[in-house]
Length: 146
Image 1 (cartoon, rainbow, N blue to C red):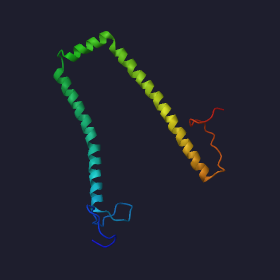
Image 2 (spheres, one colour):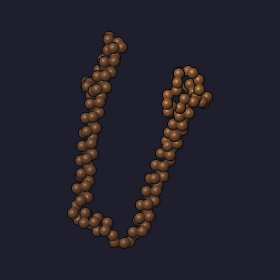
Image 3 (cartoon, helix red, strand yellow):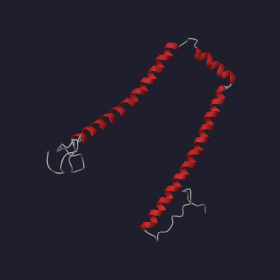
Image 4 (spheres, rainbow, N blue to C red):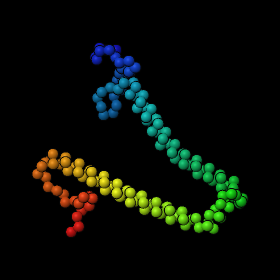
């Protein structure tokens, strides 16, 4: 251990390696390399496991359908009752209204974020160049009607 910065801090890995990351000049500590390798492994596992999990779910659904094929189950009875009562229409209307409500919420949120972003950009533009002219966009970020 060198005398570069005085005493090393307790619990901190101060050993340096000579393997620099791509595009940089400084060397990494072993703990940084271990963290990078761990993150890379988990990122790879995450990308590999999602498709496998989805495929396994479809296989389980297939096995369930094969096992229950041609048998009268509680699910069949429940489905018949639901269709008799018209619950399919109620559920479809509820899903449609939920979609419309989400669209209204999303539009309102997007306009709000555009307004705050526009105000922030305007402040920075005035700081950079006070003589700058406006682009002519209206408050919501749309072009003005002519």
